[in-house]
Picture 1 (cartoon, rainbow, N blue to C red):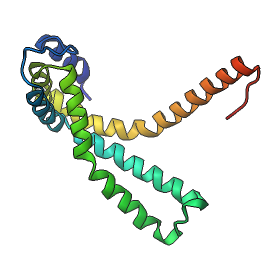
Picture 2: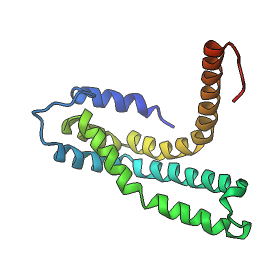
Picture 3: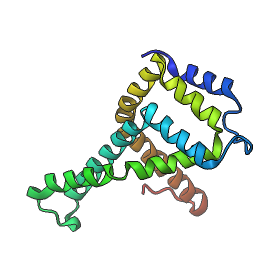
Length: 167
């Protein structure tokens, strides 16, 4: 993969004050529309789908192991398919939330510059590879977070109660 991320950041920074919304640029609605376009052009929808698919699979696996879920083994495939379908139906809503966040922090000029980068060969490479990276990183991130949280909880217990328990 080409080193596209540094180029994307450089392009965004050259375009203006990346990270600081400018109230006189345009309306929030215009920034949201630009952000929705950027999400599409930069392949973020595919990243959402990868994330939601992995979440559906993990949820189904947890349900299969939990007797309280009371899902018969022969129905787990159907339950998993429903989870995938229902979560995929939420992609538009999630994209809208993210677009609103972009609109709160970036100007239309900044958003359009990032979308412009995503139309370049390096930007297209980054968009394509980010979905793969999301898939690869999902399990690693989950394990890392679990370990980090357990460590922090053990540290808090030890410092506040003088004992360290594995939670």
